[in-house]
Image 1: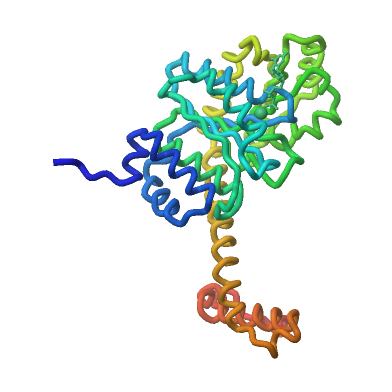
Image 2 (image 1 turned 90 degrees about the horizontal axis):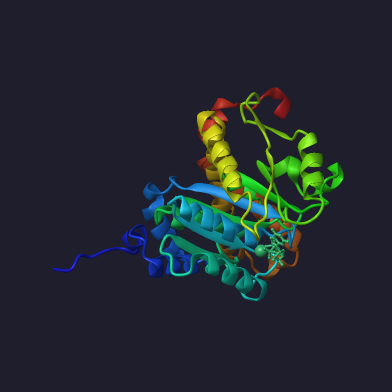
Length: 333
Ligand SMILES: Nc1nc2c(ncn2[C@@H]2O[C@H](COP(=O)(O)OP(=O)(O)O)[C@@H](O)[C@H]2O)c(=O)[nH]1
Ligand SMILES: [Mg+2]
């Protein structure tokens, strides 16, 4: 007798075919993806998530390849997601990236690499990346690395997804203003000064380290000193220390309330994105059904009236318990 397995079982069993299919469905906003992701949810939450971000050309993709090699040499399995919000259609630059990473992993079943773009993903790119992280997590990958261009390059917030954000800079990024522009103060948990084989690297590391970057935890008390490390992705130098720093940060956030708070925030953001997406879809459909030629003569008026009616219904039907807890005061009248 042949065992009947679901697509979710296949993903958990590590099927690259089924995982790939599911990821395509996520990218395209296929409703079936939602059901599989829900079935996978109990198998998620084990992977360590590392974000690799920084300006274009800093060497992120080269560094990810080096990270794959280092992690594999430690016996850890790896998933890689390459995100490029600036290219909604896959191809071009990303293919190059994928080739380079494929070199680091050729034929290795412990490595799974996908580049992703949001073509019709529900809730936008961040939601799609979160979903793909879940897929790789459920496949049992020990570490999932997400490569994305740095801050100021789109709506995408890697800090809301990864446990540890590695900011990749290059020699010359030493002064405070440049570092700030690259997002050091907002997002970096670890700074990697890449191209450590080229002149000026030592000085840049010194300059950045002397600024003493620190991150404060959600409890407002616990502090993490952001390490600044010199690496050469090309030569594979300093990569073991970089992985050690990411592991240390991961352990630190786990030992404090930090990671739990971050994970709650991540779940809330996913909830919000999903609600916003579904509401937009469903309410627009419902709103249009209330239109006729007469109402359309005053589109703004009709829109206001529709939203008012909807909020009134929400107050009456969904929020009465909350309304009872906060009764109208004289001032509201
Ligand atoms: N000298 C040197 N060049 C590097 C190093 N890492 C990456 N590069 C080069 O920098 C360029 C951009 O690398 P890439 O990984 O595509 O950068 P990304 O745009 O940040 O992903 C390529 O020509 C790499 O060969 C390094 O450690 N040393
Ligand atoms: Mg790249």
